[in-house]
Length: 310
Length: 272
Image 1 (cartoon, rainbow over the protein chains, first blue to last red):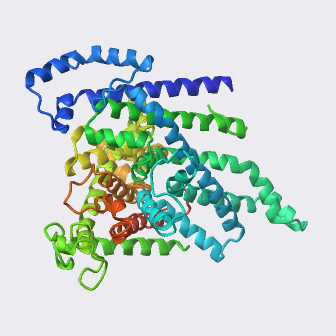
Image 2 (image 1 turned 90 degrees about the vertical axis):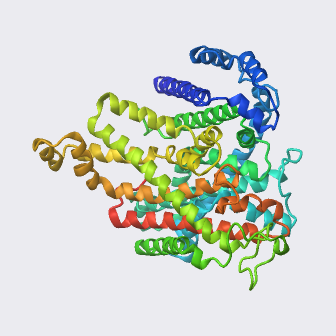
Image 3 (image 1 turned 135 degrees about the vertical axis):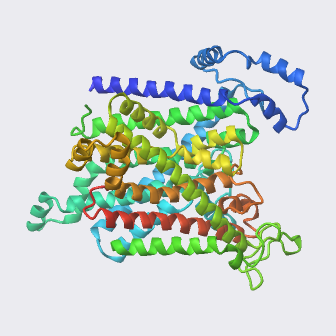
């Protein structure tokens, strides 16, 4: 157990290092980055001034030296200084991680609360209209462009029904969270409904259910009791499978709902060609993703003793 | 749901979109770009403009029809690139093995640890917006799944007789990989590629929605939605119809992929 834990952590750390290197290299090979970021600002800067600024920022040093400096900074939590705001990137990110985290949690909560029961009842009433409707919903949920679903929800619930605010973060209350969380949760909800249905159908065919059925016991209660144990694994699997695309999706959803998270910072920084901020935001997203995947893998070990890693 | 139904519904949707894309100049009543006329800004759907007009007075139906061209082109081109990269890497990794296999697997895991759209965004930040950057950014970032599948398939087939005989007959590794192995593992790869076209269309739309993909005024479904939020109150049709087209296209490719899987793999062995 401890051995596996250690190996997973080493693996994750290695991936983090490679990703950091990759992102650094990607953003170091582009010529004249700082200059283009100033030009994007529509500021006229003479060549000499530009050269002096680049020298000051150490942009003309050889690559290994810059990489060493970047890594040394990273270890101390220094992600560089934003070209656009002149603030430390780490500070800009710090305030936004919580917002993104809340959004992700809300989306997962929605997916679990709707997807699990839907999949369960669809399987219990296999072949009925409920089953067909649920499965059509699941296929649609996986195909629907999230940002468009968000627009439609926004139109219905904010503009027509006036139940919820259209966009923004508000004062951090729940009301502003509902629509973006549902929007982001649609795809994992659909996937969870599908996997739950498959799992329940499999359980229904198991021997112990047939035995119980022949003894006249209620099927639904039995399946429910048996499934309660497996449900957690299902949720974990779905989160593991969907988290990457959810993080990607949240970038778009945050922008749509003007949600002040890491994703919208990423988009805004890409638009401004503010490379240190882009680099920082990508690092945070990848770290977050790796963290969740590692946690999911470890949780498997705890939940399901049959799963053993080599 | 019946297996055949998926295939026909999905195929039908895609066929319809393909027809719209190919015959766009004949079908679209207005020019998608130059027909801007503020006199007709934000007209609701009606006899003159079937699906209404946008904030610049351009006909939404016409822009949607032309948008099908961009979506299909990007979707197919991107998936061709991804499949080419993924299959070449996966085939060679599985066939050659050794350090090459280790390296390809490491690279695949790395690609999987970065959400595709985030990776694409990073590349777009470096390359700048535009069609070519879009192709590079999306066409080089979503090959991990094809790679994994083709590698796994090769591992199960490598020791079979037909591969062994081809080697005995003196065919080189390239011939064995692409002429012997590839045709025999094509089934699951086609399924993955079909669904991949859907996700590529979605990715293009997302980037264009964010203003980082297809450059305006070129009509792209995602781009048409980018200004929709601000007009949601006065002109909801600006948001509704391009999104529906996008939804239909992605759904079409997903259904077609599901249907093909049932067709090519009746025992469900290749199911995720």
